[in-house]
Length: 247
Image 1 (cartoon, one colour):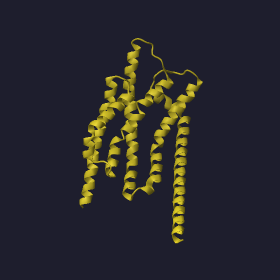
Image 2: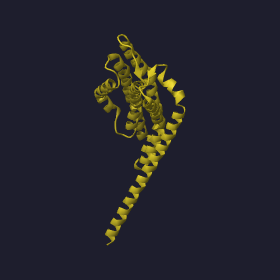
Image 3: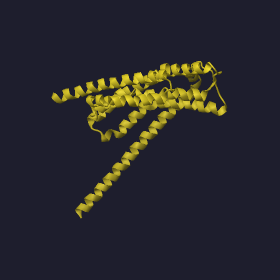
Image 4: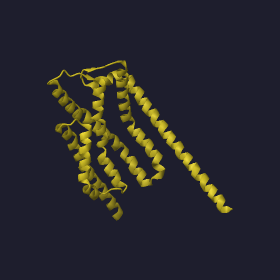
């Protein structure tokens, strides 16, 4: 009788814990959506100041009134997602915090500012270097035989394709540091799988750039440098862990 009562109590506690987790997840999602919505509205209100910066003086055409809506909302949505990323990351950390140890929780929180900086650095590299280089190169080739006209939709899609992925890829060193800090990978393991990492990066660079060698090298070389930087930073974290254990 007592065992049945204990089992019932355990079930009730599990159900209560599940409800609490669902409630916390709901709060995190709602907070993230509200923050995203505020950013989205703010960018839409100031869109006339954003457009000249994004188009950089290029003459674009619209094929219809709905294209204007898609273009403006696309820009606002993409920028809002970037600005919301740190806040969303913080909400995700708060949600998974109970499942992590104190050390893992502090380590994860310390990486959030670095995630934002790395993401913005990757976006800046894509927007100021990769995109204009590849765009100018392809437009120049086309202009030799055709009168080039590009729609705002095509321009923005191509810009996103050559910038957003780099924002995430520039976070590779931080990801490797974090995985080393929590003991999932080691510097020696990263060196062993280096050739596979290079292969993956070559595939990624081919997917996000046009099929020409110059464009792919512009993306591939920084990715290789980032991976090697990740190994160096992983080694630093690994050495610090061993020093603390020996103390």
